[in-house]
Image 1 (cartoon, rainbow, N blue to C red):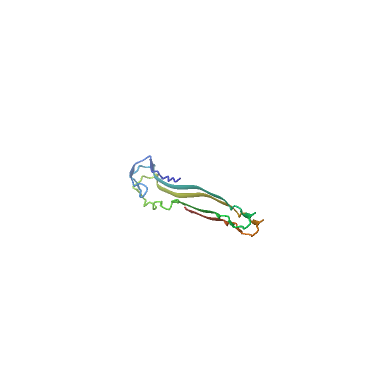
Image 2 (spheres, rainbow, N blue to C red; image 1 turned 90 degrees about the horizontal axis):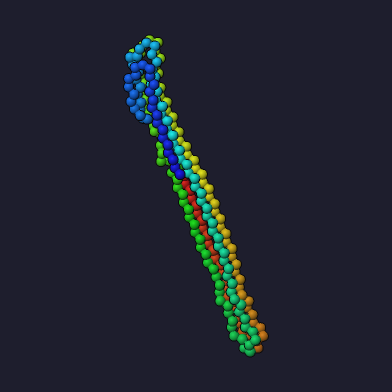
Amino acid sequence: MKKIRTTITTGVASLGLVVGMAGFAGATTGTIGTTGPSSNNQVTDNTKWEGSVENDNDLGVTSSNNQNASTGSANASGNTTAGSAMSGAASNANATSVAATVENGGGSGWSMPAAGSNSGTLNNTGPSSNNQVTFNQEYSMEVENNNDVSVSNTNSQSATSGTANVSGNTTGGNATSGSASNTNSSTTTVTIRN
């Protein structure tokens, strides 16, 4: 979430003769002239610039891999002449790749305006008069980044080969149990740029 708020106010207060009020945000000119005796005149310019950027990023990555590889039994038994018994191979393969990228502006694309070129003029004011030309400028920028990243990888593997048995034969044969294997590859990449 991004929010930018800009507030600019300009005001004039006078109880006498005030001439001239030009400009907005960048340049302001205030002039007080030809005022009567004991007059009270003010030119006031208030400029306020506020910028606010708020980034709230919540990332959750969960990978779960359960594998089980089992080969059957190879048995050659009870034969006059035993042949060959072979169990087949059992295998599992898993590949998981997760990439998450979050890029927030972070307020870098926002710039506060340059200080205003303000000028004030007082001339030909009456005796005992009270005259002021005031310029107030306030600039503020606030950037708030809240990043929560959670990564959980779980891998459970089980590989079991069967039984190879040669027994009870006049002439023994061959019994071979197949291979059992598991393969897992997991890659997680999380990148956050504020």
